[in-house]
Image (cartoon, rainbow, N blue to C red):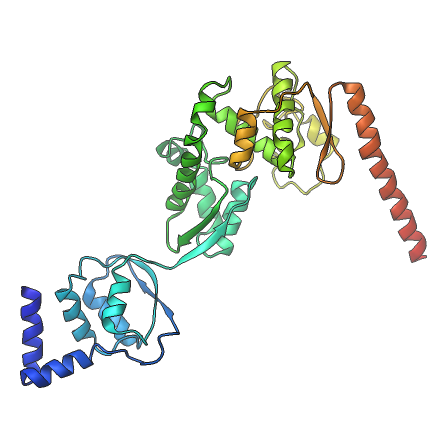
Length: 349
């Protein structure tokens, strides 16, 4: 009622009711008719009211008249419906359409893709590249044990629980808010696996940790249950896991060259060539297939595997079989590389 009275007073203030009405509604027409195909970003800052937003819209050339826009907004109850964030609007839209967009909550979002097996540091880099968060600030949130507790993660960081998925996020979310989106997606996925997990000998945290290792060990989806079976078989026999990805995770500023010194390093808590059982926590974000592979591993007696250098692995039951496979696939590869290097050297001469 008050809004309608304000509108009436505005119209009467312009002159006669007929002329005033014409002027008022003309002020709500598009600022640039015919430009509706072209949109631009308009950001509402947190705490900004209707008058401030209207003045900024007029200054940006998106509407004709801030006062008329404020009055229309009050009549339509827009004052309490404005949401902060970025919006795509056009000077070719009517003021009514622009207000509808700004009160809809349909903020502009940006795509961020997190592949399976991505580490938190790599996710941070992707967020920064997309302009969604500073990498260091996001990593600080990920490593904050208080945040981990709030999100019901069973370790002091969120590593492994930032679910790999394609997301669309608005700008200006806090690092914790972004992390919460990723962890909540993990929880949704986990609900589909919870019944299987309840009958497992490993805790949820251990399942996620092992799934992250499986994820890093193979890019071949069909191999995940076999890879999981190898590690579970080794754990059952009290054998060390001896997996390179965990060692690499525990090396600060790893340069891509894994050495014998690294494998002998007892100070690295992720060195599964020295520690028994699983490392302290996940080394990357596993997807649902890797999680399911741990919960439903292949029925096998395999204890070893080695890369065939084509994205797949050769699996072995005994150490002798494994050494033969290493000789066939890894040593022959070294010889091929050596011969290729010698041939390149001869060509250069």
